[in-house]
Image (cartoon, rainbow, N blue to C red):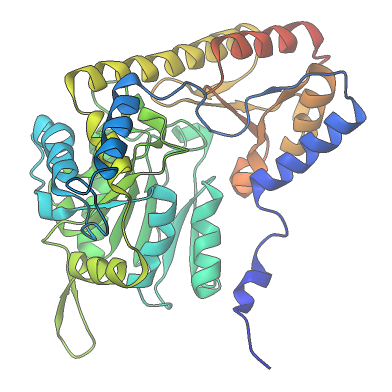
Length: 402
């Protein structure tokens, strides 16, 4: 009889957001006359920028002509997009990244799981807690999750993780953070780079929300930190800054300096391994999608995406300031589109989720779904419309009985 990967049996029965969807569906069936305001899942709601739409149409029209038709593209992505990324995301910030260190993909979530193909199953993996659950699930599927070390992130220290007490091989960091909305300063991030250098570790740095950073001392890239190119891979996405959740496009930055040795002493460059992996398992994003991504870096594209980010951060400000006035303890919402609130009256996160949906008709995300240290918190997203955001706050203010 054939065998399956039994690591799937080790996963929780329901993915966090699938469980939320189930509860929302059950509530809606039982209360067909009540309209919910959903501030749970971090999906964007604004339409695509006009510059992106225009680029999609132009690229599609090109594909309609034999002279402009594109089949398989480069595994690492089209040069025009990688050049735009390097110029606007790195050179503009005085970060020394070259085009051959950029690998275009269909998004950060896929890459954060797929990157595990490069690493042996017996590596010790450090993951912050609370954390985006896909990190954990990807490791469980890949290696059973037996070698995960959790790094508690507590409100007392701004949800910044403490350095591991034991030696770890791979470190997941996400900043600005999902779900807490917290950030690391350059000095704090330098400690992690120094740790990785000292311990021959590698940092997997998720920078999907860097466009939302408002404060000066918060790095947009780990490569702003000296020595990071020797110990870090960075993951970027166009989903949150340009609304590409439905188009799917992102990229990985793997520095040429990043290498390791086999047991026999052979040097292997991780960028070369990743490109080989992609050539085997991935045929690249389509030409129209990559043209759309490049349009983000046009003058009009920059302005339009800047306005989108500002719109969501205004929602975050509305949620943050309103809930503080109502007496809630709030984290995040300053450099990230997420607000992490402490549940009132000692409720568990799922208990408060149920109270919030039943009394106010507002959907959040229970902190327990992000790990044990997320218990006692609930995440709200600023990705709703301005109207739904204000409606949610008004309902919490007038209908929640605490």
